[in-house]
Image (cartoon, rainbow over the protein chains, first blue to last red):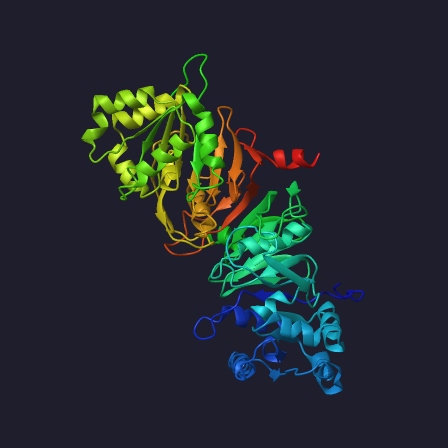
Amino acid sequence: MPSKIPDGGTRGWLVPIGGAENKDHDRRILERFLLLSGGRNARIVVIPTASRMTETGSRYEKIFADLGAGGVTVMDFDTRRDCHEPGRLRLIEDATGIFFTGGNQLRLTTLLGGTPVAKLIRVRNAHGVTVGGTSAGASILSEHMIAFGADGSSVISGSVQLAPGLGLTNRFIIDQHFRQRDRLGRLITALAYNPFAIGIGLDEDTAAFISADEIIEVEGSGGATLIDASEATYSSIAEAGEGKPVCMLGLKLHVLVAGATFNLQTRMASAGALVKAKE
Amino acid sequence: MPSKIPDGGTRGWLVPIGGAENKDHDRRILERFLLLSGGRNARIVVIPTASRMTETGSRYEKIFADLGAGGVTVMDFDTRRDCHEPGRLRLIEDATGIFFTGGNQLRLTTLLGGTPVAKLIRVRNAHGVTVGGTSAGASILSEHMIAFGADGSSVISGSVQLAPGLGLTNRFIIDQHFRQRDRLGRLITALAYNPFAIGIGLDEDTAAFISADEIIEVEGSGGATLIDASEATYSSIAEAGEGKPVCMLGLKLHVLVAGATFNLQTRMASAGALVKAKE
């Protein structure tokens, strides 16, 4: 469960990114993440633990420095014991923005899950710190995480495996590389088990900026597919055999592009800035 | 536009199939098509014109004969002039079921479109004759047909080309091989232009049996994905540049499996026989 917001406080932004965000010319997603973390006064902690590639952390360090961040620290975790280390906890305590790179989301959850670091990140977000991540780093933000699953657009029983994520929100389930890997089927399957959550499928180079008042605004060059299953009238997943198609009736579907918004409380989508730009 | 139903008459069934229907052991889709065409008294006309393979017609001829059809005629068309030929028109006039094979839907529409054969098939369906088709033969049944398009689950401007189909219904747009070729994106794109229609995405070995009172019942081993765009609140396709993602808000989505139904008039989905089987 997300940490309690202190009296008079405001929860920090959550910024899941669908992977492969532009890192060269048009870095508007990372720029906006940095801006919401304090810009020139930002102290960013980059956590590259999902990745097995040694250069992942330093690459983001360089980008955030280029974009003008006040400070950037790369903080990797090799063991669960690392997640108890006071020096690291102090840096996280002091951060204004925390960023998870891509890689394998199960590496993040198996190393960080249930440790003081995971708890502290939830607490800091409740106290106003921006937390974001790309690809695997996006998936792990939510309470219920897609661990792995089959690609393809249909809803097949057993096509998705859920696992507990870091739990910064329990309002939605995030999937990434959405269009590039045709993941609609597994996202709907994930919702079929319990339709309370909103499914967010983020294309590459596309982010959902989620404010304290739970309004999502989309940024980037792709689309964000939102599946609202809360008014679903029927799901056969309790009866469907493994590998069989699932019957799922009454879903709502929105395809958002940059500037469009979705209110997680009212569940209303709006073309937002798209419409404004036309006026 | 569909032909007018004569006074006191009942429109015939429409049976779009998502392609690759089982032809060997479990032929329930083709069996049910035959049953609705009169079973032992059926006179089936198979139109293999979409296909370039010479054995396509004879294969279906054998299957329908094996299943006990009263009579089966394979009727190919090589030129538009063939579509005026009185002998062929007489056989169609006399048929109780008309079946279009798969292949290239543009071969069917370019040869048959606007000819006496196309008109007669519409008239006969309005007089109660069952008309079905698989793959390309499913796509051509509707007024607005997906001629070709990109695969993938996102909604991209220019990713789909529509063309006039045979026009047996203007209630929906049909896509086939839906899951196997990840065609959700192009189906939503097709609806984005004008949200009045229902989009039906049929998986392989899956059929929509559409009755005279416009109730769809799904049959077969896969799923039928229905997209109802009639309550869509926004579509950006008029402004989105070619190849750009499209914003599309307020769609309804249902995933139906065998036994589930959808009423095209009330736009209500029901798990149908699925629920009944549990009682």
